[in-house]
Image (cartoon, rainbow, N blue to C red; front, side, top):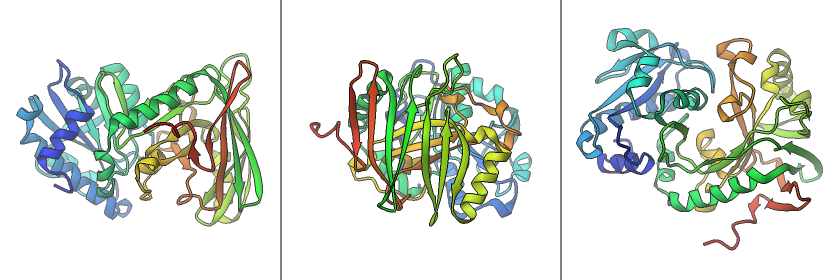
Length: 386
């Protein structure tokens, strides 16, 4: 069962999706490589996990109080946050290694039709489905746990005390709701100081606690973060998001100069600098500062594994690109093509960016008060909590 017994799998579904009266069908959504050359061992393992979960949950439908479990496959969309294809495939006892075989092994259906039939989704995919499933959940009323990059090493994070995780996430979200801005101070190579101010006006925070008790919602699993979209300037006032955001790629540093919530220039080192500068030039929507996030799972002993799905839940992170699924203004229409749509997080923990140190994160409020919620990478607001 790839680390989860049938009993644990049933308990996970019951914990994440408390039973609602209209729940009848659970769907497992999985993407299939369009070319064999794009495949990788983790993706292959994830498909096996999806298949095992489908089999295990099909054997347990009575325990879940459901009528059936569907396994739904589709050709990969090529990037995180891109829209899903119009047609998908209902699968039975197997999944192919390339998407050209989907039609031979499965039954073709329209995505909109299957969305109207399934009330609960688990989506262990290679490319993130969070954006399209969040938007579709609003339309069709289903609940979805998106699991991009899921692997067996994430299973311990599915077994945390999500009541306490949720409590901490709610505390941060309440503060983001009333903050007018956030100021982050970064130290690069233990000497160079960079400052970013994120404009939080006209926005509300989002709590991602790992439980979905209400219909019409979608979010990550494993979970444990609060996040907010900075103001993007769609009103008469200009966005006040500005500064220099440092990001480490491998051993190389890239520095994004930001004004009015958009990257306006790029500086840095080596191939990473050249690649990012070129991408910003070719794909202006990527330059949008799409999210400021606060993960809390590090305090629960969770370690990074090199997958954004989990690693972003460990600390402070900033995302570029698509934001409409979080209540922002940048969506697929602003990108050059469907395959270019992206929402990508940069995570500020020592394991992912050892040359960049988050010295402090301060929230500023409308009444003139301010509050340091992160110092030297550690939360101060939980110091008096159990």
